[in-house]
Structures are given as C-alpha cells and as structure tokens.
Image (cartoon, rainbow, N blue to C red; front, side, top):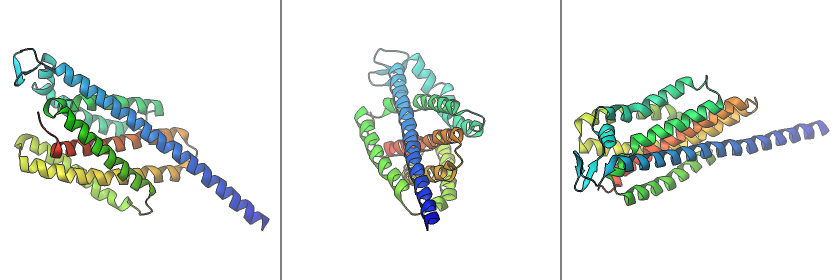
Length: 256
C-alpha cells in the first residue's frame, strides 16, 4: 500500500511538472509570435510611409498620392516578385534548416522572417483604409484567441485533420498564384472564404499539436529541442494569424 502511494505521489508530481512546463512552453510560443507580429506591423507601416508621398513624382498612385522611387521598386518594378515570394521561400528554408539551427538562431531567423513579411504586406496600407485594417485586425485577434483556446482545451483529437488541411493550404497557394495572373474577382472571393475557414481550422489544429508535442517530449528533458519546437510553434500560429487576417481583409476591408 505504501509502495502504491509512493508511485501515485511520484506520478502526481511528474504531472504537475509537465503542466507547469507546458504553461511556460505555451507562454514562450505566444510571446515569440506576438513579438513577430509587432515587427511585421511596424515594418509594414514604416515601409508604406516611405513608399508613398503627397509630393508629385513620376509615379502617380491615386489622386493626390504618388509613389516614391522605393515605392515604385517595391510595388511596380520586377523587384515586386522578390518581395512577394520571399516570405514563402524563407518558410521552406526555415523548415529545412531548423534541425541545424540553435534555439537562438531559430528565433533570430523567425524575427528576420517577420521583418520580410512586413515589407511584403506593406501594400495594404496603400490600398485599404487604416480604420478597416485596425478593425479587421481586432476581429482576427478575437477569432484567433477563441480558436487557439479551443485547440488547447478540447479533448477531441484534431490530428486527423492534418492531411486534409495541408492539402488545402497547397491548393490555396496554387489557386492564389494562378489568380495573380487571372485577376478574377469571383475567384478571389472564393479563395478568401476558403482561406478564412482553412486557417481558422489550422489555428485550433496547430495549438493542439504544439501542446501534444510538448507533452510527448517533455519527459526526455531536451531543452534545446523544446526551445526550437517553441519557435516552430510560434511560426505556425503566426502564419495562421497573418493568413486569416489577410483573407478577412480581402473580404471586409474598405479600400482607399
């Protein structure tokens, strides 16, 4: 009986340690993601300010607004393709290099990626009103918080959704690239609706996956691996948030 009580006490202690470690792990994930979001927002806002001017230049953008040389390079010249696709290339590079990077190196890479994403998304400040951007951001933040909380607390196993969601993301990327050339409003609307639903589901899925991954590996005590896992988790949730925000902005944003 005494031996049983000892085993039960040890199991309870171990469970409490995992719970405490999980909270710290999730705090690091959300904290890293939040810093990345701030970097992206500041980079986008600053770059848009440098790209647009009220002083007449050779590059008219809209009534009373003109592109600077930097703005022309980013949004009109062939460099726009590099700016547009650089974040996508960096995601694949990050996934391939994560095992060779240290936790500190992975975190630095993530922040550089967030900066590149900010430059890539800076055009929204030229096209949409600041009020609608702030409004849609707030809606996205509330929806993201609810979906992520659901993924964390639900007892339902969401792992079966993984393959379907990955296939959906690939299909969405292909459709978005095709529509860059087609410029079909109907196709853009369909892509935006599907994108919102897809990344809403991914938010819950990724949150549960981050939690389950930590619990499965916490017993090994590999702090270096768990540190990198937190960065990868932050990247996944960051991408879920950014994509959900962008698709909602396409649907509900008010254009200048």
